[in-house]
Image (cartoon, rainbow, N blue to C red):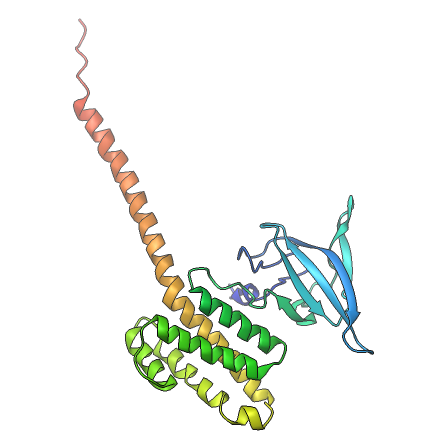
Length: 257
């Protein structure tokens, strides 16, 4: 079967299914309940769509320059809609900004300061504030080094220390993060970014997200699964031992003539 896991990296799978950035449930139903617009420029309108997840009832906001067609979801509830697009038409590319800015909100097991800096960096990047995005990414790495008690006085030495401390993280990720130093060089203040550097920042943020997941989420998930399996084992073996003990302790029924 083909690998369709890329669908999990979208807000909207299709006109009917939505990946919620709050409860992290995939392929759930959704509805839009409010749409309004304002003038982005004197000649251009921007449309605001509020989307409600039918699983957790939380609301995300999506901005688009397109007036995307909608159709009623419930005939009896005229204020509930979904996007009315063709079968093979993608919805996500129609939006240029969404809140939460991070497609899936970072796991709460990641330290708060790191989550806030990541969200700010990604928000800056979405709005094309590339200097701000690179500065937040660099600040995030410094805070990460502080939390992990990395050694060194420079950005590069701290990353190399992190690479040694956290051998459970793919070392190539730390090598990629070293490029932030290049992105935030004096060129940032003297020349404008070009398209390649914008894509470079996207790689850096994706790398940071993987590093944070490997450090703070995956170990906790593994521990939770291990505990669940051990609890299940104790429950099953405990029931078996109890049943065996009951059979041993049960008095024999005397035979009747």
